[in-house]
Image 1 (cartoon, rainbow, N blue to C red):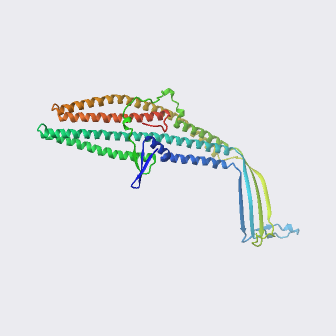
Image 2: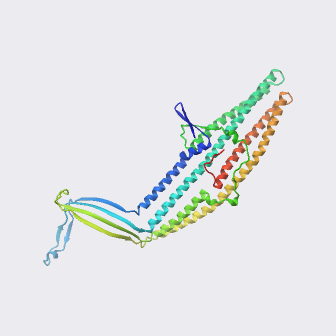
Image 3: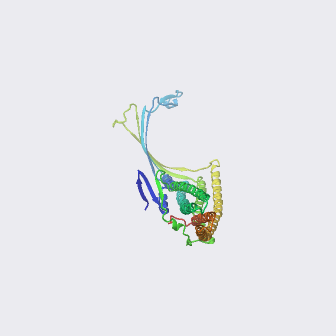
Length: 443
């Protein structure tokens, strides 16, 4: 459960990595956008499918003939040879038509292909959402580990400041007793100021990295985020990992979202070819209409004594394409080229994913070895520092030796932190390259 509390009218969130992942699943901008695209694709299916369902429309048309149309009739209609043509005006001034029309598509191969394409597009959008979630997991975990490294470096600096403070007190006593030079105190002050400056930079780095996490999970910028660091000791206490690592030959890239997306695009390209070919097939539809017509010399359509005339029609409509100016041939060719391009992209992705896996595995194994080496380096550096500090207190070693020993210990600890973070990040990359990265519990 995410801990939320308010202070001074400002809401604060306290989250660990798992909680940030859960929050991001609902609030990350990319995931939310992908979800909307998925919903839009589902509506598109309904829209396309609706083209093949029965349609019923009503219509109402009113006409006021300010000047009625004139027609010329042959004079022979009068039965008098040589009679002049008859100029006549037909119809009434006021006309009102009210009717209902119904239609139903009976057969259209293009409609069938269109529904199939809409469904395939929806499947692609669903995969894109899954891909967005995996990418958010990878990004969030990586940035979280970077923040933990900054916190750990802050802890190292604070420990160094405490140690240096004790050294300063002992050195001052030595200076007061005439057993050390005042310049030794100055050197300590210089080192102390340098560490304080580094501490300020680290604190600023914490703020920047926390803001990055807020953006990734979709938390409002005005809301304060406090990242739970209670497990930071476990994160940097290296233990052999039980990460299930698969061999290269055991990997099935077909299960990765990247390849699934390309496969769906290939299927979509094939459907687009079929749809283009279907444009030359006949289309059959049925229709019916029933209309009431009224014609008046006066505007009295509500008069029940006046007649309304009925017109009813039923029929079929068949459209048989004959020549389309060769545009359909170009559409088929374009769809085939898109299919070829998707197949090339799949081959490229296979090669790229294999390289990503091999690089992540190499980085992971290297970091494991380095962690073991650097753990020993820290133990040795601590021993050197303790021995040098003891000798300094006894007057058997110089301040320079002590400061160097402290610096070497700090450097070993910082390198260990850096390597531990690289190992955890490589683990995330390795899981992603294997297709097993999910909203798991992370360290």
